[in-house]
Length: 207
Image (cartoon, rainbow, N blue to C red; front, side, top):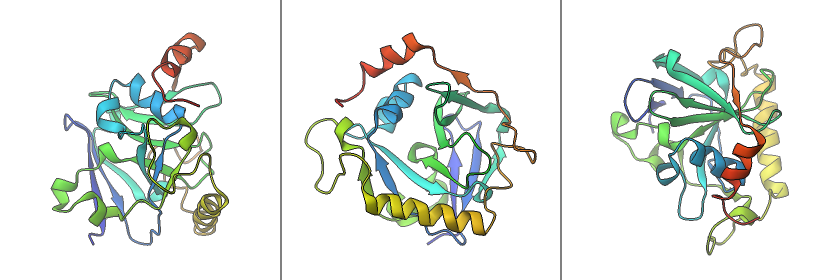
């Protein structure tokens, strides 16, 4: 297993890496309507979403995420005024990651389409392991794989809490490529209007 995962947007203007040292992340697929809406908003649903409308996400700590090129290309979107921060490469609309709106939270959910496994001479599973959970199946499309949670199960919540607790104890929330040392967002997010949200929901799977 490599000690990092290379990141690259589809046009190559943005690049970065995830430092895997000290990481114990559990890869997840989220089928929620917000993740689906994000992919549709960027016009990248075919690349991002699987056959069930799921987004393959790898949790990591902000301090393990590094931008090495094209940081000026990074843009931010919020589906609602209080929604998650959804980061992407503005040059080609490749999703990068989702993160909480607070710099105190040691969590970044990296979207699989930004990963450049070819550069590391590896595969997706070799790099970050198998899928450990599939959540929010109530928004899924078609027959769902066995074990898909309709919402978020208690075991999944416990996995996330362990990850966050370890991050807090080890102060992994800083440095962050998305927030400065004072906890301010480096990019002002664009917040979708209500009409934009309604239009996107029509493209998502059932609730």
